[in-house]
Picture (cartoon, rainbow over the protein chains, first blue to last red):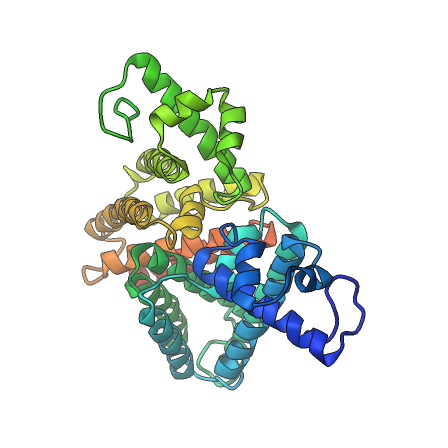
Length: 208
Length: 208
């Protein structure tokens, strides 16, 4: 990414792309920790070490920058999830996926929640373009889960009648709700519990 | 509520309490629709018709006002949930609870999410006092679900071994995650699907 400019789609020089990436990375980090609303363009300037004219060369304003942050965070999360889920074909593999997400969230005692879910909560109702991009990213993430559940079905770990699309939605709901409860409690336990119920449900189907 | 002042805990006159309630109600409505971050004290002044000196008489600043909004929204949500869940003792009753939440969320096509969950996502990592208040409110809400599940167990709709506390966490996770997915999709479907998986899991336990 970051080889074309968000503002007018023209190609960037290698140097322009590096500057743009520096801005978006700094903005993503700040928005993750401080929240989208509390992060100003001045914060981003200070954190990225980029000049104001460089920033405005790449981004018309905060909305444009937020949209670039959505793209970056979405790309990061989907890359992580493709790695984690791409070859999972057993419930045991799904448990390892759950363990890894819970372990990472425990390192910060639940704080900040899911990078993508937090962006969705912050901007879904404020910027419809950003909301649509987030919605597409969630669809892609859920498709990775749907693929896993198809492989579980093919391998006999789920019955042929298992509604894989809806189960993938339920898994994503359990994950996102778990992140939010853990963020509020500053304790990873409710996230682990929420995912465990979803996985127990998959197991109950396989035993049924 | 609203008979003592948030700022110094002194008792308010009836008129002072009305002014304070007007400010908090206006702030809660604005923050629900615009988000916490995007709502300024000037917005609240304009929407409530209260003077700046009145506002600062009751609230030191935005943080104090946000905490009062958390109290108000928490009270509203818990009152609604006590009404909805207080006498539920069957899975069928739990389905009616689910139907009512989904129907209300469908009216706004998923927008804005859960009033309490949206506040949690916006401020849990920015204000630790507000986070603790939100965490307590979620614990109270979840206790209502735990009580329902106890009654299901007493009535034979859940087996004696059912881990009611953890199932209540799972239900709350499914609800909150469902709200967030619906908010992002501007479509209530993923919320309905997420809750349905949680309820199907309870039913699978009762059949087991």
